[in-house]
Amino acid sequence: MSFKLPIFDVKNLSFKIRDQIILENITFEIYEGEYIAIIGPNGGGKTTLIRLLLGLETPSSGEIKIFGQKLKNFKEWHKIGYVPQRATLVDENFPATVEDIVKMGRIAKRGLFAGASSEDRAKVHDAMVKMDILDLKNRMVGTLSGGQRQRVMIARALASSPKILILDEPNTGVDMLSQQRFYTLLAKLNKEENITILFITHDIGVIVDDIGRVFTINQKATICNDPKQILSCEEVSELYGINAHSLYNHKHEH
Ligand SMILES: Nc1ncnc2c1ncn2[C@@H]1O[C@H](COP(=O)(O)OP(=O)(O)O)[C@@H](O)[C@H]1O
Ligand SMILES: [Mg+2]
Image (cartoon, rainbow, N blue to C red; front, side):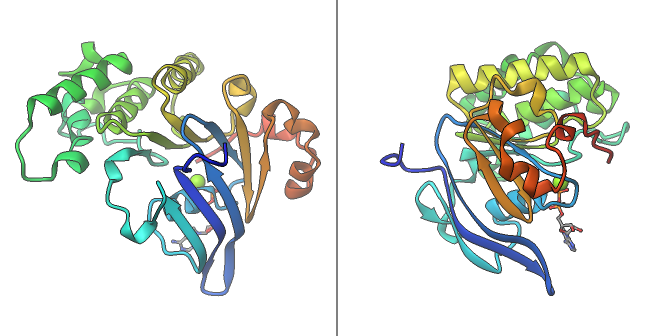
């Protein structure tokens, strides 16, 4: 794979807040078509890592390239779909329909002041079809269930035709059945549309057959190339200072 240009190329990345080391010397590459899970304890730096990848925080040292370009020169943000942590927790009176929310995903592509084109409308429609929310398009987003909101947020991210989808624990307030359906949709996007997926989750036991690699982030990074071996991955146990089995039973509270 090394002859292909990585989507993300991260070298010796460190991030400090005042004197506190949050992330230390992180190096990895992410290639097109991969499905990677990021796991790690609360406060381990997972969200911070994603924010660094998106240019929302500035590294203390190290380098990030996106599609071969230095992050500060990178302009094609529509190629990256991002669903932040807690994105599904919208106010129940939030004044927007499902379709409005998905349309917002086109803004990065089209610019804030241009009118919607037929391409915009087609992409918004496609994204709603892919996420199975077309029948909800005129509903106010605040009236939806957690699982439905989750699919709306992914559809918004998909509307800009991203090459990579970055999801930061998108499961808050979502029941088990909806989660299963959601994982199936993600696997389909990865396999059938070749969309690269970077998924922060505590549920790796459930998606272990879908994912290609696992990154554990706890200030430092460990990369496991075979997710099925993760329980026996010594480095993971070391990193957590616990038996890696408990990763599977870890319930995330936010
Ligand atoms: N803006 C910030 N100011 C101060 N501390 C922060 C900030 N963002 C993150 N942190 C700290 O960085 C560490 C990693 O947090 P975070 O990236 O949210 O971890 P995770 O997503 O793995 O739970 C935590 O100790 C958190 O308190
Ligand atoms: Mg987080």
